[in-house]
Amino acid sequence: MPKYENILADEPGRKEFLLGNEAIVRGALEAGVDFASTYPGTPSSEIGNVLFYISKKAGLYFEFSTNEKVAMETSAAASASGLRALVFFKHVGLNVAADAFMSTAYVGTNGGLVVLTADDPSMHSSQNEQDNRLYSMLANIPMVEPSSPQEMKDFMKGAFELSEKLKLPVLFRTTTRVNHARGIVEYGELGKKRGKGYFEKDPNKYVPVPENARRMHRELLEKMEKAKELANSSSLNRIELHGGKIGIITSGVSYNYVADVVKSLGIDANILKLGFTHPFPDNIVKEFISSVDKVIVVEELEPYLEENTRVLAQMHNINVPIYGKLDGYFPRAYEYNVDVVKTALGKILGLNIRDNSYKAKEIELPSRPPVLCPGCPHRATYYAAMMALRQLKIKDAIITTDIGCYTLGIQKPYEMADYLLCMGSSIGAAVGFSKATDQKVIGFVGDSTFFHAAIPGLIDAYHNNANLVYVILDNRTTAMTGHQPHPGLPMNGMGEKAPYVDIEKLVRGIGIDWVRTVDPYNVQETIKAFKDALKHDGISVIISKRECALLWDARRRKQNEWWVYEINQDKCTQCGLCSDWLACAAIFKKVDEDGKERVYINDALCDGCGVCATICPFNAIEKKVIR
Image (cartoon, rainbow, N blue to C red):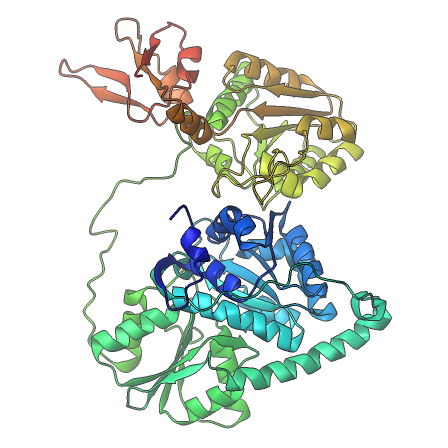
């Protein structure tokens, strides 16, 4: 079948080996989802990628929204119109959407509304590892947590039904290891679409001015009491009896580790697996902890389940020892694995556990940090900025950066990252530094991030007469999360032709006069642009425009055109400009048989951008056509 077509198969009982994120899409289709929106971010990106390919055939609307707040608002409106809507993003995306998210709990829903947050314990691709289960408590909405691809599909369908029953959004909380797990998923029937909805106007219900909001809050609390009854009777919560008087409470991916350890060590323990975790299913937990002599709570990140369990035990005078994070048996930071759980259970139960895990001190491995791809236009931009600063003898410039591939500019030799907070913070922080210091300030932002969160900051910079250089790295895609479209491209989330926003026109429309668009592969032009911008008093904006090297490579392969560059050793003086200052991943040094160190280019990595040839002062780097 063509890409992702198997997700659309209307064959109940069919079994497919699906990624967790693919199973989520299948579950939404079985729930009859009509509307979906997102801003891409790992570990949730594949959900949007699948929807991008299948939305038309599936008969649903899908968009890559400008940011998560907009995504939340569009899906909330679709739900208010009676449609089933799914909005999803990585955990920090919920921070961006939080304003709309909190109010949606008050306003409520008509069609089912599922809000998926993909948390990232151990920060594999994130700036923090916040536990978004706490958002369900803060917003007072129900939450479910699947543990496997099959549950991803099944729980998604259940979440939509729960949302419509309670007239509330439901938080669907996943983590990286569940999103990216693969497993056998058995299909159910595809749900029936509702097509176009209809919004019945009722300002008292949908406009939370203070008079209405006070009533809405009381109604929300009443809905959550009903939700607690549902949690206590939900099939998403189950007890696995294995004998003995040890009880383990767990949820999400941690359940998989617990199940493995209990089986491998032959521990006689009963497991309470919670899938409907907020409101806390107090009756189930009360009955469970009353039936055992020892309670162990296994969960990643914050002690959400543990704290609720301890409070419940105290309220009902259940005198049973409870072990978890608060007494130091389980770590609070980073994701778990079988070894973490095995070690903790060994300490709690007094078992002699043999530690078979490898230690970093025992096996010293070379560091392999991520690097910018060969041919990446960001490398050429950073090289130009670095050379401009050196030529102008500016040693203390402050570099603010943002979220994207280009954050790798933090590495040597560029060192183009001194301060970072979140999406869009490059410009707000740059304004702050420009006002708080007399140092030169350069901010870097990607094109997708610019649309996501940087435009208000640029308006602020203009209005408050900031003195800074702002660089918009326009590589014509949302590169870091999988090349999704954004408002600067002539294509939308349905794969249809769409009007696009011209970045230079937008910047000039704010009122900024000093704007220059450059091709970073033209290194000398880009260096000059940086030097002129740094000399300018006020705001100067450089738009470094060149498509992502991976897109360029893909097009050349389709056209069966390929060339690389090689170093003419007779001309090369080993000056190090290409190897040490441009530092392309395809360029390396090695000691030859004569004992001399020379610079070479790896044919397998070189993508033929030619930037190294442009900067070589001795014309020692030459083009070699492969086909």
